[in-house]
Each structure stands twice: as C-alpha cells, then as structure tokens.
Length: 284
Image 1: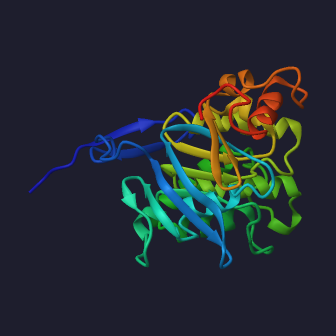
Image 2: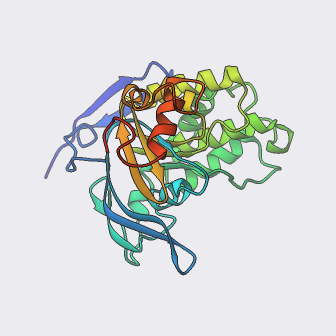
C-alpha cells in the first residue's frame, strides 16, 4: 500500500487554493514536452503540409512563425492530436502519437485554441468554459474554481455571465483562450490567439503567456512578429512544411540586415531567413 502526500499551494494569479499531490511534483519521465522526428502530416491525398519536420520543444513560450500556407495550422492540429501523422514520429509528454489508438488521457493535458472555434451562442461565457472543462474531464468538484481562475486570467470575470452572442469578437477570443487553459494543460497550443484583440488586450495576453510559460510548453502560431518579440522564449520559423530556423528572438533579429524587407530587426531577420539557406545568420 502506498501513501500520497498532499501539499497545498497558492498561485498568485489564481487567488484560490489548490491541492497538489506528490505524484504531480515528481520528476517527469520525458525529456521534452514535444518531440518530432521526420514528422509528416498530409492535407488532402497528395500534399504534405508538414514534410519531414525535426523539432523539440520544452517548457517556455515558443512562437511559430511563417508565411500563409507554410503548414503552421496543420502542425498545430497534429500537436493537438486532431490530425494523425502520415510519417515520422511524434511524441507528446513522452507518449507516442500515431496509429489508430485513442489519446484520451493525453488530451486531458493539452489545451488547444484553433483559429476558429465553435460555441453555442446561447451559452454564457461561464457555461461554455464549464462545458469545455467537463469535456476535458476536469473533476466535477474542481470545475467551478478552474473556470473562475480561467476567466480571471483573461480579464473576463465581470462579463463571464453574459451570453456568448452578446460578446464582442475580442471577448469571444478571450473566452477561447480561457477554455484552452481551464484544465491547466502541460501543452498549450494557440493558433492566431491575438486576432480581434485590441492593443491593451494584446499587452495583457503577452503577460499571460509569460506567466504560463514558466511551467507549460506553450506554442503560439502568429503572424505578428512583435508578439513573438515580447512574449516568446524562442522562435520556430516554418516554411513549406519544413523548419527554417529555431532560436531566440535576438538570434532571429541578427539574421537580417538593412538590405532586407521589414520595419524592425525581427521583421528583417524573418525576411532574410525566408529568402533561402545561407542568407542569414541563426540556428538552422
């Protein structure tokens, strides 16, 4: 018979007490939250939107950049276990993803915000997030507290009991972020999360990303280079289904020069690296 020790901790951001078991704070059995080797993910019958990707990601905030059609959304969907790999290997939290087996337990530990997400317009924001918490199998007794923490973190505590159809586009997007974090995921996948957010909301979102990245593997797909500079610990540049660059924002900025297109060092580095191998300086 084994015994478990329960330690009570307080998260500054949560304003509520949560119980953490000894198993929760034990060393993880995996080296990386996300590991892909030769990963291929198809779109349609012939095209590989992700084509031979080698990538490892751990705790922190990882900005996923790339032009339209680069394969970013396909990669995010594969990491969310929505799409099945067509080749190579993909491991999430030490578990191999692929084949026809289910990943129910794994999905409980993943948060996912797609570019567009469906919701019932008659639900209040709180009801929708509660419903998503139930789908993610958050224990029933924990759901009210988890939902309250989530709405507070996205700044919607005062609007949580309004119907979704009455919320602005930016508020709906924040509800989407709240449902993605309600289960305190170990991997958080956000596809264009700042669409519809005003400048003040984007600043708060960057702060939230930095908070989450202290103990979570966060992957943020975005077209906004400034969001990467402000919140991300590293950058993954993706083009034509392949990894072009992985490094820090400073390394991305150093890859470009005044001759490259862009209004900032980061944008010029982005442009330089997309022009082709050997034209920038960075981690290839």
